Amino acid sequence: MFTQASGGSTVSDSYILMDYILSERMAADADRRFKLEDVYATRGLDYFYGIGSDLPIEDKLAYWRDMVKVNFDHASGIMQVTVKAFEPAQAQEIAKFIVDQSDNLVNSLSLSARNDVLRAAQDEVLAGEARLSKARAGLRDYRDKSQEISPEEGAKLAVQLIGGLEGELTKLNADLATAKSQMGEDTPRIRVLKTRIESLEQQLAVERQRLGAGEKGTSAANDPNAPDVAGRIAEFEELETEREFAERAYTAALGSLEKARIDANNRQRYLALFIEPTLSQMAQYPSRLLNAFLVTLGLLFAWGVGVMGYYNIRDRA
Image 1: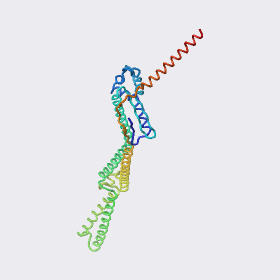
Image 2 (image 1 turned 45 degrees about the horizontal axis):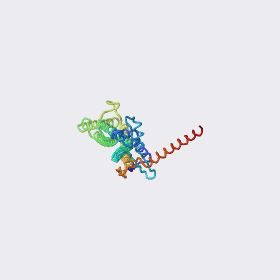
Image 3 (image 1 turned 60 degrees about the vertical axis):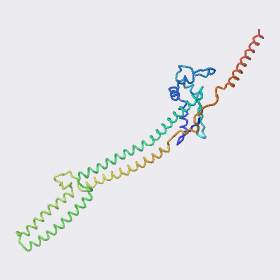
Image 4 (image 1 turned 90 degrees about the vertical axis):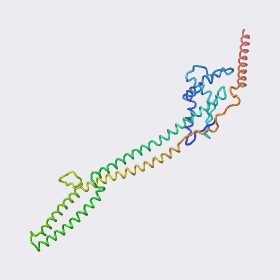
């Protein structure tokens, strides 16, 4: 079976996968899935290769590492996994199990790396969204309180209104002076002009107070804490500046999130299986001829040592 961890993986990822295949966790999972003591139980001529019974996990892990071999080619990044068992079908099933577990591990690593990349960017977006909402709420509260969209525009309208009232007041004063030169103080026209002049002066005073300190015509005498035009403009500009900055920060955070999402997609890992676990047609282990030769050689060596020892003792006697 040949596998490769691809899609932005590194050599360290392959080493992680190798360690995982030969780890205690993999051995324990395989034991729960296949019952290693049953799969590798002692049988027939394979007596010396059996796993035994009632073994602790440490012994099972050592036996697992004898039955499963992992080779990694640094040049190609290809990993070869060899599984030994007494039955070909059992070896193939265990190899498929290793592939499935390894695939789950690679997917988990990929998801973890993707979440790590996105988490910081998402936090920035949430913080920017909260700041923008707060800035907009502050601006809305100011407009509800002041009853004006922009204090600058309100000030311009107030100045225009005061200018118009002053122009009309100047005209009425001129008419009053002309009338006084032609008629007495108690004539109806003069009384009308004086009444209109008093009304305009009162309205002009109210508009000047509103321009200087007011909110909806509230005078400074009635509300000494009411801000003047300059104060309202400064407050509005501060709120508007905060809103604009919050919008730019939020837009930048969205851009960073999109870039982080692209980077996260580039860091995805997946397990590419080049060759499926195969079913062996011929037993490869144990090497009976080699083992028989080694046993014969060992016996001959022991026989030779015994013979030499015997003649040595006889000569000394």
